[in-house]
Length: 308
Length: 296
Image 1 (cartoon, chains in turn purple, cyan):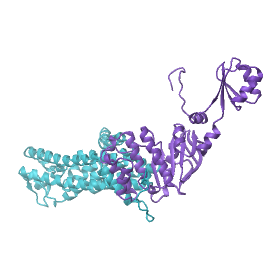
Image 2 (spheres, helix red, strand yellow):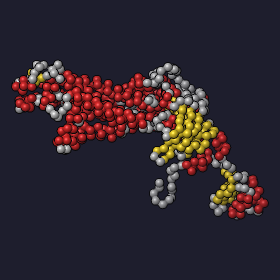
Image 3 (spheres, chains in turn blue, yellow):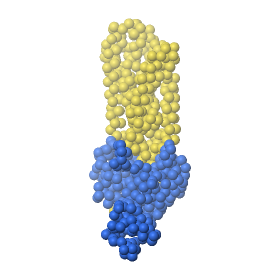
Image 4 (cartoon, chains in turn yellow, orange):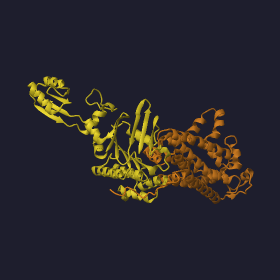
């Protein structure tokens, strides 16, 4: 179990993480979701004692990381896949890590086999593809057979087969009763992998929920309506308590009422309707909607000057 | 997907400590090729320059004035390789730290060993022990090679209590034995000079964290600072020069009976050794403080 309480971290005037509190439960996969630059990696680094928080605490199994007696046997972590000396072999890399926590040598061969790198274990890690490096990073996380695992964007750079492999691995690790905390900036990936969800934007907590609840509570029924008398129809629908947002002079998006109510109201008012279609917000859109205020770096397309 | 649960025997006693960090750092140091290339360069430079310089100096013996003969130092000539080796150990010492920062490996290291002081001391101990072995073997081998070459040029062994006067008046090139006054000390300190410099470079690595920056700073201290000191008024430069790391190294390798040649310009060998050790402690201390304080 991972507990984060009031965690804050600033770099100069920028608040990377701002009063963040949440718990990561045992036996399930908890997704850690947020746009790029929202403070996910900083939070993970603070949990692992690499960055010092300005305020707040993070504990693993009730203890600060720094106080764990055999850190690798309690927490495994994948932070950056390419964090390997390019001239060192995968086997020697893992051997040195194993020695820091008195992990027996045969465990190195076990994890190499588990991630499918046994054949290339003697090769220089610098020659590895990004996918192989991710596998090596996962191998080092599993080395101490820890009960708590943190993965920062583990599917980055993996091919579809690799992505499926990571998903299945995470699920089997959770089934074994471990605590799995996995970050991603892709809502769709989290929907497939995680059951619990912690969403942050600009370093602040946006949601601490389950994937199912997150989708249910954030997807609002929206109806697209097309009509030649759009202005009049808007007035009628607003009178019914609907929220109307203009799409063009021919169509509107209506929320808070469903398609049948819109149709009935139009008939009563004698307004012709050319299209009436319920919209399903995708998870990606929900996520974008929710975090749009908290994205630091928006792209500006078609604006004056050079794109920023 | 099976067998994620492994066979790591549960350990309830003890904790990950220095002993484990030391073993891990040794695995890291020996498992990259650059370590062995550096060692090969040290050995080749030591023996090669010892042979070259003693040969050249011995060839000039008959043309030397009496004053120059008095300064003829068979020990120092044999240790000429130190001039190259000092940069090699600097690169090796800095890279032990900066290679971890450039790849991000330092963060993996610290998630395995959260006690940063253990990481720093383990790195330092592994590096120092390896270079102690390599440095001393090179120093002794160079010494004996140098004396063998001087003998080949018709050199004659000086008696252990030979004075400078006897060296000057002798017709033959002086050859010293390891038991001659100050010789053992000079050879041993020649090896230790490399050990201390590597630790100094490791400290710079922890301060600067980039390979290019650390190596530039190290080379700057050894080569550039002496040049700057040199253009200062001699009243100032004379009082600073003995404390420059390169001159401390020279003071450690010069044989005692010949100290008079450098009177006022060099410290005594043990004072030089002590000063250099203090430099290393200060630099590593600053590095350790920054390492503890900064985000990894």
